[in-house]
Amino acid sequence: MQMVLTPRLETERLVLRGFIEADLEPLVSFYSVETTSKFVGGISEPWQVWRRLASYIGHWQLRGYGFFALEDKSSGKFAGYCGPWYPNGWPEPELGWGLMPSFQGRGLVLEAAKRCLSYVYEDLGWKTAISAIDPDNAASRRVAERLGATYEAHGPVSFFTADIYRHQSPQEFRNSLNS
Image (cartoon, rainbow, N blue to C red; front, side, top):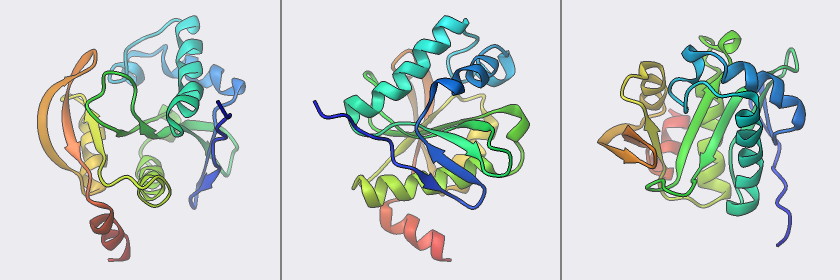
C-alpha cells in the first residue's frame, strides 16, 4: 500500500492541511467541552482524542481522502477540521466539519466547506455528497443550507441518528460559486 499524502489547500483565511501531532492539544480541548463536542461524539478523554486523531490520519490511507486540519493564516493556530469523510457504517460519503470556539461566528466553516466541496467534485470526481447533522445542531444546519444543501431524510448513521442534507451537484455548486 502506497502512503497517501494529504494535499495542502488554501482559502482566503485558512490553510487546509494534514493533521499533525501538535493538533492533539487543541483537539483535546475541543473534545473536553460539552458545547463543542456534543454533536460529534461527546466529551472524550485525551487517550480517546489521540485515537480520533489517528483515525483522521488513517482515513486518508484507507480512503485516499479525509478531514483536513484547518489552520488560521493570520495566527497559525489550529481552527478546526473540515473535509470528506466516509467511515465504516456511514450511508455514503459525507462532507463534515467542526470549529474551535474561538474561531466560530466568522464564516470560516463555510469558507472551508466551499473549498472542500470544490476539492471532492474537481479532484476526487464525486458526483454527490451528504452532510449528516444532529437534529439539534442548528449551526451546522445553517452551514449546510448556505452551501446549497437540502434536507433529504432523518435516519441512522452508524452510531447516531441524523438529518441527512444532500449537497448540490457538482454543476449546481460551480454555478452557485459564479453567481
